[in-house]
Amino acid sequence: TDRTASGCFFHTTLRENLLEITVLNRKLRERLTIYFTNISAILSLNFTDKGAFYLYASEKDMQQAILLKPALIEDGFRVINYEKHVPPGFIDVYGIDSGGQFVVVEIKRRTADRSAVMQLQKYLDVIRGERNEQVRGIIAAPRISKGVQKLLVTLNIEFKLVDPKTCAELLNKTRPCDTLDRYFDGD
Image (cartoon, rainbow, N blue to C red; front, top):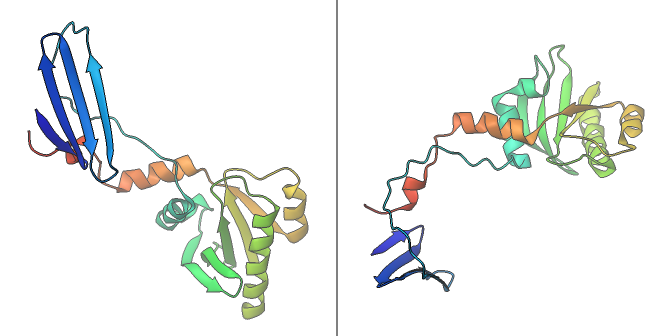
């Protein structure tokens, strides 16, 4: 029996007490052959895929989750812009807090370290120079590295725990469910 799935070609052969399954991926020029010599039973089942695979969010996914639900940063936070270009780079999320103060958010998928804080500080310097008013800075990450807390206090930058898993779950609620069926042709 031959079957195409996700660019692969499957071939199954049964001779006496030998089952051979060969999978060929022409695009990658790979071939895998599996031999079964002691066969107790062969079943053909129709499986239903009810499971889901979650890959924790990338920084881009975390940004999308914050855009969908700004309260991940804090209640009352409203997004004005994202990927805002400033001379040293791009601000991940830019908005206004519940008190009307401007907020610059730097997102890190992993532990936020000193370089992340200094990157945010550069963005804050630019925005404060443009606006000539107070601007809050927030590092949004699952955790901060040792010793960074003191730097945050010194620079008056806040840390907000934002978990990539929570962001992924939020995004997955808004995306259609993906099943294995889309990888198989026909019956």
